[in-house]
Length: 542
Image (cartoon, rainbow, N blue to C red; front, side, top):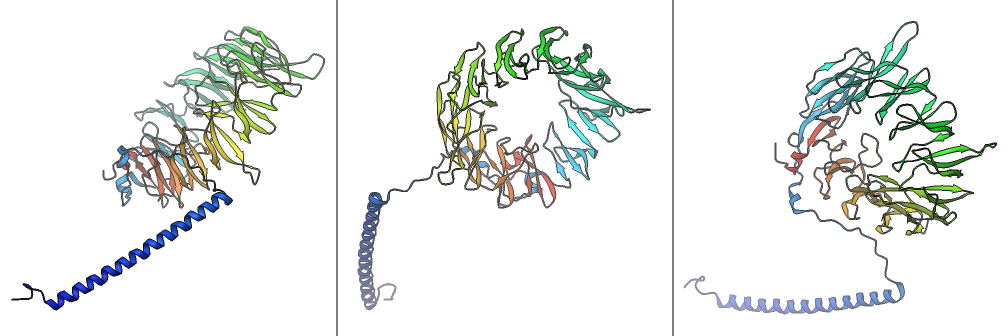
């Protein structure tokens, strides 16, 4: 019989004793641990009771609601080994400056000159131009001694005919021609997209079309031409306001009146100033009181009827929904175009109309100030938000308004949130900075020196954990989402985050631009590359 068949009795005895000893030890350890947990729990309970009775419960910081990323977004995961050859259309291009793609092409700059490349990175126009302006159908290319047009097929025309060609607006572009002689002169006109001179180059200046009419200048006076190039109103006026709804304010000397498109006087020349007509059909006018130097404001309609007499010390030019803010005897109020007082004078220290950015709402609301605190009221004077805020930015964007409250310790406006147009506090004042403008439904906010993004419901879409963002081409204060992606900075490098808060690239770029037409410029070690959004969504695709 072998050991494998029958264990040794002595070995079995030793093993049983050892096992019993271990179990006894385990029981002792378990009892000790149970006692320790009970003591610790009792200590915590006593401490909580003491604090609740004598110390108070510490205030918990507000955490904005966080939206959950949808499951269909799981494919937007960065490749573990980021490779520009895989992710980019073109990995390394030696340009000094680049611009977003437009109609499949982008401007690039090399050695101070401008050129064009296509979406594959191929240079289709060499970098030898001073400036290039895109249009829907035509592109304007300018050299120092030449200026011409290029169509979508790459055909060029109008070489050497004009010294300047402006951007096409409503099918027409300003042009200028330099004439040398005893005296060098520059004359201006308009061309159409076929290159035909619609308005001849005979004017000292031409100005953009408005309501089918463009102001032109000759002998230091202004007149108007139509889109056919006919000078329908001669150059006899010293100043003008552009046409709107068939009317334009003009002046012979110091008095303004209003003419129609035939040049007929609709409103007599008796005002020191006439503003532009609002959508409601009203314009602010200013008169000088006879025999004095005092100036007073009122309002006229399109017929010239003075619907509000010129009796106010000052008034806001804009009229919204038939109402405006006016001042009289040092007090402000709101009146309608029937002359009725909507918000009494002296009720508030100041009243301001809101500007509306991208909003199509017909609501009329005002910022009001009382005792150095701000709130909002509606067009009937009803209080929406009480005057409890230390600042309000008078812009409505995506239905929201930025408000601020002071830090209780330092007495400076330090925390910002958002109200809706009904006066409800949608987002509490918890951010150290907040954008007044929403782009594509999102706004940038700051907490603890870090930025993130929220949507209009106040939910966090990108947590406040980033150091900065890219300043886009128009030098906007805030970088915004484009094609569902935004550029942000972390630890000195730029990268991309989508609208679900997911980082879709590493933060390895020295510069990064917003996506346009599915492509974005990035720079690494002095060279530019073109990222493909489609390839970022499918990182293994080559």
